[in-house]
Image (cartoon, rainbow, N blue to C red; front, side, top):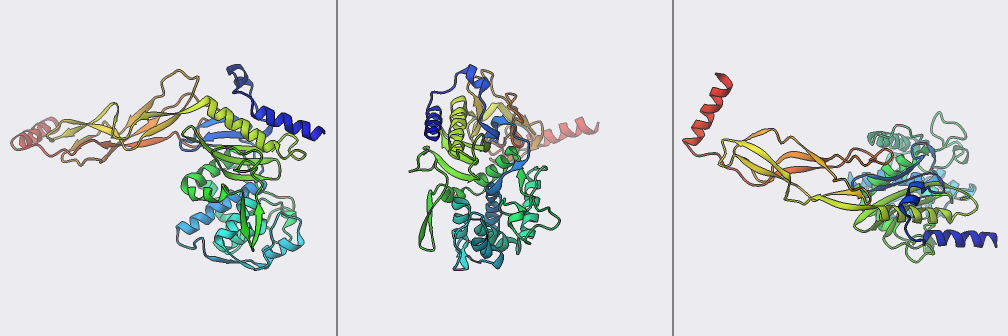
Length: 410
Protein backbone atom coordinates (compact mmCIF):
# COMPACT_ATOMS: atom_id res chain seq x y z
CA UNK A 1 0.00 0.00 0.00
CA UNK A 2 2.82 2.42 0.91
CA UNK A 3 4.52 1.74 -2.43
CA UNK A 4 1.29 2.34 -4.38
CA UNK A 5 0.67 5.59 -2.51
CA UNK A 6 4.17 6.88 -3.30
CA UNK A 7 3.82 5.95 -6.97
CA UNK A 8 0.47 7.79 -7.10
CA UNK A 9 2.01 10.88 -5.54
CA UNK A 10 4.92 10.80 -7.98
CA UNK A 11 2.61 10.53 -10.96
CA UNK A 12 0.43 13.34 -9.58
CA UNK A 13 3.48 15.60 -9.20
CA UNK A 14 4.58 14.89 -12.76
CA UNK A 15 1.17 16.05 -14.02
CA UNK A 16 0.90 19.19 -11.91
CA UNK A 17 0.73 22.64 -13.59
CA UNK A 18 3.97 24.46 -14.45
CA UNK A 19 5.98 25.88 -11.57
CA UNK A 20 5.47 29.52 -10.57
CA UNK A 21 8.44 31.88 -10.74
CA UNK A 22 8.87 31.59 -6.96
CA UNK A 23 8.75 27.80 -7.14
CA UNK A 24 11.15 27.88 -10.06
CA UNK A 25 13.83 29.46 -7.89
CA UNK A 26 13.52 26.58 -5.40
CA UNK A 27 13.09 23.70 -7.87
CA UNK A 28 15.40 20.75 -7.29
CA UNK A 29 15.31 17.26 -8.69
CA UNK A 30 15.15 14.39 -6.24
CA UNK A 31 18.44 13.03 -7.47
CA UNK A 32 22.04 13.43 -6.41
CA UNK A 33 23.13 14.78 -9.79
CA UNK A 34 21.15 16.18 -12.70
CA UNK A 35 21.37 18.46 -15.69
CA UNK A 36 19.20 19.57 -18.61
CA UNK A 37 20.57 21.03 -21.85
CA UNK A 38 19.24 22.11 -25.21
CA UNK A 39 20.90 19.82 -27.72
CA UNK A 40 21.70 22.07 -30.69
CA UNK A 41 23.21 25.00 -28.81
CA UNK A 42 24.41 23.10 -25.75
CA UNK A 43 22.83 25.69 -23.45
CA UNK A 44 22.41 24.47 -19.88
CA UNK A 45 18.81 24.83 -18.73
CA UNK A 46 19.23 23.29 -15.28
CA UNK A 47 22.18 22.07 -13.25
CA UNK A 48 22.36 20.35 -9.86
CA UNK A 49 25.70 19.04 -8.57
CA UNK A 50 26.45 18.23 -12.19
CA UNK A 51 30.25 18.20 -12.05
CA UNK A 52 30.87 15.52 -9.42
CA UNK A 53 32.01 12.22 -11.00
CA UNK A 54 29.80 9.31 -9.97
CA UNK A 55 29.06 5.75 -11.08
CA UNK A 56 27.09 5.69 -14.31
CA UNK A 57 26.68 1.92 -14.86
CA UNK A 58 25.19 1.06 -18.27
CA UNK A 59 24.85 4.71 -19.30
CA UNK A 60 28.41 3.90 -20.43
CA UNK A 61 26.78 2.12 -23.38
CA UNK A 62 26.08 5.51 -24.99
CA UNK A 63 29.82 6.14 -25.31
CA UNK A 64 30.36 2.59 -26.57
CA UNK A 65 27.62 3.12 -29.16
CA UNK A 66 29.26 6.38 -30.29
CA UNK A 67 32.50 4.55 -31.09
CA UNK A 68 30.56 1.84 -32.92
CA UNK A 69 28.84 4.43 -35.12
CA UNK A 70 32.18 6.14 -35.67
CA UNK A 71 33.67 2.83 -36.88
CA UNK A 72 30.71 2.45 -39.23
CA UNK A 73 31.25 5.97 -40.56
CA UNK A 74 34.92 5.11 -41.16
CA UNK A 75 33.88 2.10 -43.25
CA UNK A 76 35.24 -0.51 -40.82
CA UNK A 77 31.85 -2.24 -40.47
CA UNK A 78 28.16 -1.74 -41.08
CA UNK A 79 24.93 -2.64 -39.34
CA UNK A 80 24.84 -6.04 -41.04
CA UNK A 81 28.42 -6.98 -40.17
CA UNK A 82 28.53 -10.24 -38.16
CA UNK A 83 30.19 -10.11 -34.74
CA UNK A 84 31.59 -13.23 -33.10
CA UNK A 85 30.83 -13.59 -29.39
CA UNK A 86 34.10 -14.30 -27.56
CA UNK A 87 34.36 -16.75 -24.69
CA UNK A 88 34.73 -13.79 -22.31
CA UNK A 89 31.48 -12.20 -23.46
CA UNK A 90 29.62 -15.50 -23.72
CA UNK A 91 30.64 -16.77 -20.30
CA UNK A 92 29.21 -13.64 -18.67
CA UNK A 93 25.79 -14.69 -19.99
CA UNK A 94 25.90 -18.03 -18.17
CA UNK A 95 28.11 -17.60 -15.11
CA UNK A 96 27.57 -14.03 -13.91
CA UNK A 97 24.63 -12.16 -12.34
CA UNK A 98 25.05 -9.17 -14.67
CA UNK A 99 22.24 -8.03 -16.98
CA UNK A 100 22.34 -10.09 -20.14
CA UNK A 101 20.54 -11.93 -22.93
CA UNK A 102 21.30 -15.43 -24.22
CA UNK A 103 23.97 -15.32 -26.94
CA UNK A 104 24.06 -19.03 -27.74
CA UNK A 105 24.32 -18.49 -31.50
CA UNK A 106 27.76 -16.94 -30.87
CA UNK A 107 27.39 -14.64 -33.91
CA UNK A 108 25.10 -11.61 -34.29
CA UNK A 109 24.96 -8.49 -36.43
CA UNK A 110 26.12 -5.11 -35.23
CA UNK A 111 22.51 -3.92 -35.29
CA UNK A 112 21.30 -6.81 -33.13
CA UNK A 113 24.00 -6.18 -30.57
CA UNK A 114 23.36 -2.42 -30.52
CA UNK A 115 19.68 -3.07 -29.84
CA UNK A 116 20.56 -5.52 -27.06
CA UNK A 117 23.04 -3.07 -25.55
CA UNK A 118 20.93 0.08 -25.72
CA UNK A 119 17.42 -1.27 -25.13
CA UNK A 120 18.08 -4.17 -22.75
CA UNK A 121 21.46 -3.13 -21.28
CA UNK A 122 22.90 -6.51 -22.27
CA UNK A 123 26.47 -6.33 -21.03
CA UNK A 124 27.86 -9.15 -23.17
CA UNK A 125 26.44 -7.54 -26.31
CA UNK A 126 28.24 -4.34 -25.37
CA UNK A 127 31.52 -6.18 -24.78
CA UNK A 128 31.21 -7.95 -28.14
CA UNK A 129 30.81 -4.59 -29.90
CA UNK A 130 33.84 -3.19 -28.09
CA UNK A 131 35.93 -6.19 -29.13
CA UNK A 132 34.76 -5.84 -32.74
CA UNK A 133 35.79 -2.17 -32.86
CA UNK A 134 39.16 -2.39 -31.11
CA UNK A 135 40.16 -6.06 -30.98
CA UNK A 136 39.80 -6.31 -27.20
CA UNK A 137 38.07 -4.41 -24.43
CA UNK A 138 41.22 -2.85 -22.99
CA UNK A 139 42.10 -1.31 -26.36
CA UNK A 140 38.51 -0.11 -26.63
CA UNK A 141 38.77 1.61 -23.24
CA UNK A 142 41.80 3.47 -24.57
CA UNK A 143 39.61 4.69 -27.45
CA UNK A 144 36.94 5.76 -24.97
CA UNK A 145 39.47 7.78 -23.00
CA UNK A 146 40.83 9.43 -26.12
CA UNK A 147 37.34 10.33 -27.33
CA UNK A 148 36.10 11.96 -24.13
CA UNK A 149 39.38 13.88 -23.83
CA UNK A 150 38.78 15.28 -27.33
CA UNK A 151 35.46 16.65 -26.05
CA UNK A 152 37.13 18.41 -23.14
CA UNK A 153 36.18 15.84 -20.49
CA UNK A 154 39.10 15.58 -18.08
CA UNK A 155 37.58 14.06 -14.93
CA UNK A 156 36.43 10.69 -16.31
CA UNK A 157 37.36 7.30 -14.88
CA UNK A 158 36.86 4.63 -17.54
CA UNK A 159 37.76 0.99 -16.95
CA UNK A 160 35.44 -0.97 -19.28
CA UNK A 161 32.89 -0.69 -22.07
CA UNK A 162 29.83 -1.52 -19.95
CA UNK A 163 29.93 0.33 -16.64
CA UNK A 164 30.13 -2.88 -14.61
CA UNK A 165 32.36 -3.00 -11.56
CA UNK A 166 35.63 -4.86 -12.04
CA UNK A 167 34.76 -7.58 -9.53
CA UNK A 168 32.13 -8.89 -11.95
CA UNK A 169 34.59 -9.30 -14.83
CA UNK A 170 36.92 -11.94 -13.46
CA UNK A 171 40.37 -11.64 -15.02
CA UNK A 172 39.11 -9.45 -17.86
CA UNK A 173 40.00 -6.12 -16.34
CA UNK A 174 41.69 -3.05 -17.66
CA UNK A 175 45.38 -3.32 -16.70
CA UNK A 176 46.31 -1.71 -13.40
CA UNK A 177 42.75 -1.16 -12.13
CA UNK A 178 41.44 -2.22 -8.73
CA UNK A 179 38.82 -4.86 -7.93
CA UNK A 180 36.16 -2.28 -7.10
CA UNK A 181 36.93 0.11 -9.97
CA UNK A 182 34.05 1.26 -12.16
CA UNK A 183 33.27 3.98 -14.66
CA UNK A 184 32.80 7.42 -13.10
CA UNK A 185 31.49 10.44 -14.98
CA UNK A 186 29.68 13.60 -13.95
CA UNK A 187 26.18 14.48 -15.14
CA UNK A 188 27.79 17.23 -17.24
CA UNK A 189 30.13 14.67 -18.83
CA UNK A 190 27.19 12.41 -19.63
CA UNK A 191 25.30 15.34 -21.18
CA UNK A 192 28.28 16.10 -23.42
CA UNK A 193 28.43 12.46 -24.57
CA UNK A 194 24.68 12.25 -25.17
CA UNK A 195 24.70 15.52 -27.11
CA UNK A 196 27.56 14.44 -29.35
CA UNK A 197 25.83 11.10 -29.99
CA UNK A 198 22.51 12.70 -30.95
CA UNK A 199 24.09 15.41 -33.11
CA UNK A 200 26.72 13.28 -34.84
CA UNK A 201 24.72 10.05 -35.22
CA UNK A 202 21.00 10.85 -34.97
CA UNK A 203 20.23 7.44 -36.49
CA UNK A 204 20.73 6.01 -33.01
CA UNK A 205 17.29 7.36 -32.14
CA UNK A 206 15.74 4.71 -34.40
CA UNK A 207 17.01 2.20 -31.82
CA UNK A 208 16.58 4.09 -28.55
CA UNK A 209 12.98 5.00 -29.44
CA UNK A 210 12.01 1.31 -29.61
CA UNK A 211 10.32 -0.08 -26.49
CA UNK A 212 11.17 -3.64 -27.56
CA UNK A 213 13.18 -5.67 -30.07
CA UNK A 214 13.53 -9.23 -31.31
CA UNK A 215 16.62 -11.38 -30.96
CA UNK A 216 16.97 -15.13 -31.40
CA UNK A 217 13.26 -15.12 -32.29
CA UNK A 218 12.38 -13.81 -28.82
CA UNK A 219 10.76 -10.46 -28.09
CA UNK A 220 12.57 -8.47 -25.40
CA UNK A 221 11.22 -5.35 -23.71
CA UNK A 222 13.35 -2.41 -22.68
CA UNK A 223 13.32 -0.57 -19.37
CA UNK A 224 12.50 2.93 -20.65
CA UNK A 225 8.90 3.31 -19.50
CA UNK A 226 8.67 6.79 -21.02
CA UNK A 227 8.54 5.46 -24.58
CA UNK A 228 5.31 5.03 -26.52
CA UNK A 229 2.94 2.46 -25.07
CA UNK A 230 4.47 2.48 -21.59
CA UNK A 231 3.07 3.72 -18.30
CA UNK A 232 5.10 6.97 -18.26
CA UNK A 233 4.80 7.64 -22.00
CA UNK A 234 5.81 11.13 -23.10
CA UNK A 235 5.05 12.45 -26.57
CA UNK A 236 8.27 13.46 -28.34
CA UNK A 237 10.61 11.34 -26.23
CA UNK A 238 12.84 9.07 -28.33
CA UNK A 239 15.67 7.91 -26.06
CA UNK A 240 18.20 7.44 -24.65
CA UNK A 241 19.20 5.09 -21.78
CA UNK A 242 18.21 3.89 -18.32
CA UNK A 243 20.63 2.44 -15.77
CA UNK A 244 20.64 0.63 -12.42
CA UNK A 245 17.05 1.50 -11.55
CA UNK A 246 18.15 4.92 -10.31
CA UNK A 247 19.44 6.84 -13.32
CA UNK A 248 18.33 7.92 -16.77
CA UNK A 249 19.43 9.91 -19.80
CA UNK A 250 16.48 11.13 -21.84
CA UNK A 251 15.92 13.24 -24.92
CA UNK A 252 12.73 14.70 -26.31
CA UNK A 253 11.68 17.07 -29.08
CA UNK A 254 8.88 19.42 -28.06
CA UNK A 255 8.07 23.02 -28.99
CA UNK A 256 10.68 22.91 -31.80
CA UNK A 257 13.47 22.23 -29.29
CA UNK A 258 15.41 19.06 -28.44
CA UNK A 259 16.25 18.76 -24.76
CA UNK A 260 18.60 16.22 -23.17
CA UNK A 261 18.24 15.45 -19.46
CA UNK A 262 20.52 13.47 -17.16
CA UNK A 263 19.25 12.24 -13.80
CA UNK A 264 21.74 10.21 -11.75
CA UNK A 265 20.95 8.34 -8.52
CA UNK A 266 17.40 9.34 -7.66
CA UNK A 267 16.42 9.52 -4.00
CA UNK A 268 15.09 6.11 -2.91
CA UNK A 269 15.61 4.96 -6.49
CA UNK A 270 16.79 1.53 -5.39
CA UNK A 271 13.38 0.94 -3.81
CA UNK A 272 11.29 2.89 -6.31
CA UNK A 273 12.93 2.66 -9.76
CA UNK A 274 9.99 4.52 -11.32
CA UNK A 275 11.28 7.72 -9.70
CA UNK A 276 13.80 8.14 -12.52
CA UNK A 277 10.84 8.54 -14.88
CA UNK A 278 8.93 11.03 -12.73
CA UNK A 279 12.08 13.07 -12.08
CA UNK A 280 12.88 13.06 -15.80
CA UNK A 281 9.30 14.10 -16.56
CA UNK A 282 9.50 16.97 -14.10
CA UNK A 283 12.85 18.13 -15.46
CA UNK A 284 11.55 18.06 -19.03
CA UNK A 285 8.41 19.95 -17.96
CA UNK A 286 10.63 22.56 -16.31
CA UNK A 287 12.83 22.89 -19.42
CA UNK A 288 9.99 23.33 -21.90
CA UNK A 289 8.01 25.68 -19.67
CA UNK A 290 10.80 28.11 -18.90
CA UNK A 291 12.89 28.12 -22.09
CA UNK A 292 12.05 28.64 -25.74
CA UNK A 293 13.91 28.75 -29.06
CA UNK A 294 14.51 32.14 -30.62
CA UNK A 295 15.63 32.82 -34.19
CA UNK A 296 18.30 35.50 -33.84
CA UNK A 297 18.72 35.92 -37.58
CA UNK A 298 17.25 34.05 -40.54
CA UNK A 299 19.35 32.39 -43.23
CA UNK A 300 20.23 34.86 -45.97
CA UNK A 301 19.66 37.90 -43.76
CA UNK A 302 22.25 40.29 -42.26
CA UNK A 303 22.60 40.65 -38.50
CA UNK A 304 22.15 44.30 -37.49
CA UNK A 305 23.27 45.54 -40.94
CA UNK A 306 26.39 43.34 -40.96
CA UNK A 307 28.50 44.00 -44.05
CA UNK A 308 31.97 43.84 -45.55
CA UNK A 309 34.07 46.40 -47.41
CA UNK A 310 35.34 45.54 -50.91
CA UNK A 311 38.37 47.04 -52.62
CA UNK A 312 38.24 47.69 -56.36
CA UNK A 313 34.76 46.30 -56.80
CA UNK A 314 31.70 47.56 -58.62
CA UNK A 315 30.21 47.74 -55.14
CA UNK A 316 32.04 49.23 -52.17
CA UNK A 317 30.13 47.17 -49.60
CA UNK A 318 27.78 44.20 -49.52
CA UNK A 319 25.83 42.57 -46.74
CA UNK A 320 27.28 39.66 -44.77
CA UNK A 321 24.35 37.30 -44.32
CA UNK A 322 23.69 34.27 -42.12
CA UNK A 323 24.54 30.91 -43.66
CA UNK A 324 21.70 29.26 -41.73
CA UNK A 325 18.92 30.22 -39.38
CA UNK A 326 20.69 31.12 -36.14
CA UNK A 327 18.40 29.61 -33.51
CA UNK A 328 19.32 30.18 -29.87
CA UNK A 329 17.56 29.42 -26.59
CA UNK A 330 16.17 32.09 -24.28
CA UNK A 331 14.80 31.91 -20.76
CA UNK A 332 11.16 33.01 -20.98
CA UNK A 333 11.39 35.46 -18.07
CA UNK A 334 14.61 37.06 -19.34
CA UNK A 335 13.48 40.35 -20.88
CA UNK A 336 16.92 41.43 -22.10
CA UNK A 337 17.71 41.22 -25.79
CA UNK A 338 19.80 38.21 -26.77
CA UNK A 339 22.94 39.46 -28.49
CA UNK A 340 25.68 38.13 -30.74
CA UNK A 341 28.92 39.55 -32.07
CA UNK A 342 30.37 39.50 -35.56
CA UNK A 343 33.96 38.49 -36.17
CA UNK A 344 36.16 38.99 -39.23
CA UNK A 345 34.07 41.67 -40.91
CA UNK A 346 36.78 44.31 -40.57
CA UNK A 347 38.79 42.57 -43.31
CA UNK A 348 38.80 44.45 -46.62
CA UNK A 349 38.12 42.03 -49.47
CA UNK A 350 39.60 42.38 -52.95
CA UNK A 351 37.20 42.06 -55.88
CA UNK A 352 36.15 39.80 -57.42
CA UNK A 353 34.23 38.01 -54.68
CA UNK A 354 31.74 35.20 -55.15
CA UNK A 355 28.34 34.97 -53.57
CA UNK A 356 28.27 32.74 -50.45
CA UNK A 357 31.97 33.17 -49.74
CA UNK A 358 32.51 32.83 -45.99
CA UNK A 359 33.48 36.32 -44.84
CA UNK A 360 33.08 36.10 -41.07
CA UNK A 361 31.25 34.50 -38.16
CA UNK A 362 28.43 35.41 -35.84
CA UNK A 363 28.86 34.16 -32.26
CA UNK A 364 26.27 34.24 -29.50
CA UNK A 365 27.15 36.35 -26.44
CA UNK A 366 24.57 34.99 -24.01
CA UNK A 367 24.96 36.46 -20.52
CA UNK A 368 21.94 34.71 -18.95
CA UNK A 369 23.89 31.66 -17.85
CA UNK A 370 22.96 28.77 -15.58
CA UNK A 371 25.79 26.89 -13.92
CA UNK A 372 28.48 26.42 -16.55
CA UNK A 373 26.35 28.20 -19.14
CA UNK A 374 27.03 25.91 -22.10
CA UNK A 375 28.39 22.39 -22.23
CA UNK A 376 31.07 23.66 -24.60
CA UNK A 377 31.51 27.00 -26.38
CA UNK A 378 28.61 29.30 -27.21
CA UNK A 379 27.24 28.60 -30.71
CA UNK A 380 28.22 30.45 -33.86
CA UNK A 381 27.43 30.40 -37.57
CA UNK A 382 29.19 31.52 -40.73
CA UNK A 383 28.43 34.84 -42.38
CA UNK A 384 28.44 34.79 -46.18
CA UNK A 385 28.84 37.33 -48.97
CA UNK A 386 25.32 38.19 -50.09
CA UNK A 387 26.19 38.78 -53.79
CA UNK A 388 28.83 38.34 -56.45
CA UNK A 389 30.97 41.45 -56.83
CA UNK A 390 32.90 41.97 -60.06
CA UNK A 391 36.07 44.11 -60.28
CA UNK A 392 35.64 47.78 -61.11
CA UNK A 393 36.03 48.71 -64.80
CA UNK A 394 39.04 50.62 -66.18
CA UNK A 395 39.88 53.48 -65.55
CA UNK A 396 38.19 53.26 -62.13
CA UNK A 397 40.23 50.14 -61.38
CA UNK A 398 43.50 51.90 -62.29
CA UNK A 399 42.55 54.85 -60.07
CA UNK A 400 41.72 52.55 -57.14
CA UNK A 401 45.14 50.91 -57.26
CA UNK A 402 46.87 54.28 -57.68
CA UNK A 403 45.15 55.65 -54.57
CA UNK A 404 46.06 52.52 -52.60
CA UNK A 405 49.71 52.81 -53.68
CA UNK A 406 49.84 56.45 -52.63
CA UNK A 407 48.22 55.75 -49.25
CA UNK A 408 50.43 52.77 -48.47
CA UNK A 409 53.79 53.69 -50.01
CA UNK A 410 54.03 57.47 -49.97
